[in-house]
Amino acid sequence: MIQLETSFVKKKAQYTQVYVSPNMYIYRVDNPRASLLPFWEVFKTVIKQPDIYHADEYVSYPGDERFGLNAWACSTLGSVRKVLAKHFADDDINTVSDEALSEILTK
Image 1 (tube, rainbow, N blue to C red):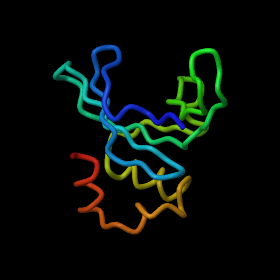
Image 2 (image 1 turned 90 degrees about the horizontal axis):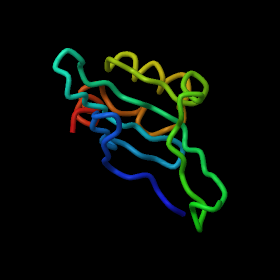
Image 3 (image 1 turned 90 degrees about the vertical axis):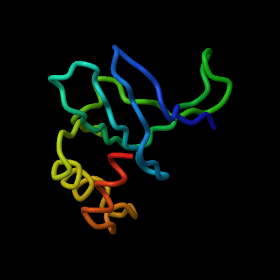
Image 4 (image 1 turned 30 degrees about the vertical axis):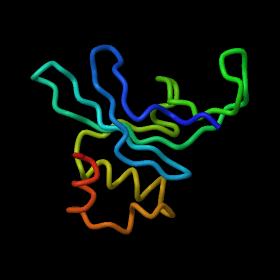
């Protein structure tokens, strides 16, 4: 299966994978514009079938239409924690302290 890239640039923003598990991904998004603080995109793993661009099954990064359904943009540790508690209750990341979660999100 083809996995997501660990780091990439899109629309001048740097996306860095900071956490992955079988059911979810978290990416830190750093925008070069100084006025925008970093934020995180938290989303459920969606596996797509092979197509003309992919010879194997692949994990799909969410498009705009998935945000609010199975992907969320979070601007604070608190909002990340709320998304994790509501949508990923069974994931191991929910067992870490806020301090440890903060370290994961800022690596």
